[in-house]
Image 1 (cartoon, rainbow, N blue to C red):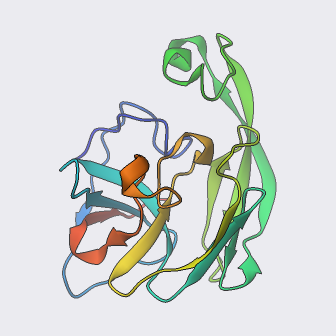
Image 2 (image 1 turned 90 degrees about the horizontal axis):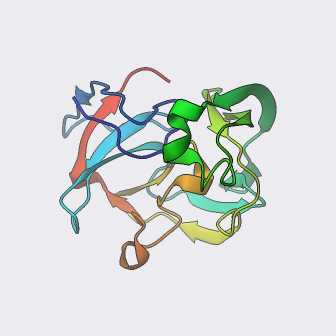
Image 3 (image 1 turned 135 degrees about the vertical axis):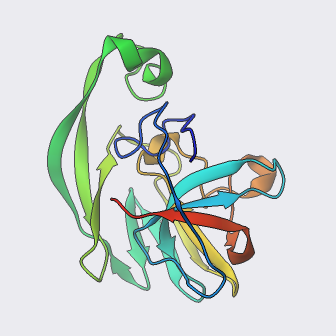
Length: 177
């Protein structure tokens, strides 16, 4: 069981949620689209993000759209997410622009195999565009569902991100999307 302490996985996992992960075995590789738990080697903390890319995949972002192996992942308008005053203290600066509460659009992103999940679309971010990289052997690439609030694989560890995540650091997977 893990306690979620950031807004990086909104709307899927709110701050304070305590989801239970299935232990990751060394013979089974998680699949794209699954939420994974992994240990960060620098901080020794556990993090939860969505697995987007596997070793050998090419990945880039253009204006918030993931380009996986040369093909953009479709994103469609889905719903509206209400960030209430009770939760605004956690999200106000980064998501609500300092307001006490706000409504934020949700997008549905779909992977090539048809797996889809919701993303919190909180406007433009300086991390919406990333040059193409190839994920090295023995690593995966993760993104938060609230991409404007996630220090994920787009950012190297030396500036506070997760960088490429070594497969050996995986702890578990969450079954539900």
